[in-house]
Amino acid sequence: MSNKEEVTIHLSKYIRANSPDSVNDLERCLLGIAVRHYDDNAIKGIVDLMDNKESLVYVTLSDKSPRSRTQEGYYRKWSRAFGEFCGMTPDEMHNEILFQTFGTIEIETKFGWKKRPNKRSGNTTKQEFSNLIETLIRTAAEMGFNVPPPHREAHDKEVKN
Image 1: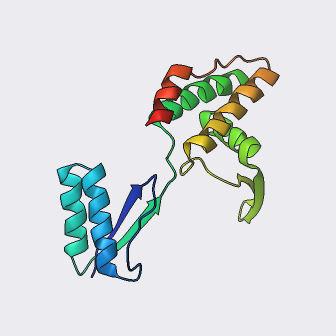
Image 2: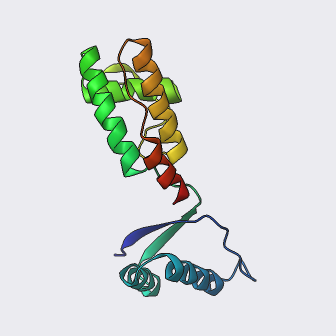
């Protein structure tokens, strides 16, 4: 039985190799990226995964930055407060904001037709999560609830990283 591991490396540049079909070139490129961007323990883990011939390793290279903890904390705090103002649970409010930001689809289940958001917030980028926050602020303002804007200083620090 083989192990299945997944490694995600976020990049801001493309990988270039002389022979894209060569597994050895790809491994060398990945190790070069790891050495430049990760600590010794992470590098050792990547090397161990690549050396283990029984493991299936899926490597995802992405230039998208996931949402930040600052964004998540801000959004959860104010969506919860807005939900209380509206008489909704945090999950209900979160779904409503997802509906308004990303649109909806209807799925037939054994409980009948259910409305679901087109996209969940779990794999959003910083920009997509910023859109979610903007929708929260705008919707709350339209209903008479004040959500203060995020601190610009913290946002500017994250954009530079």
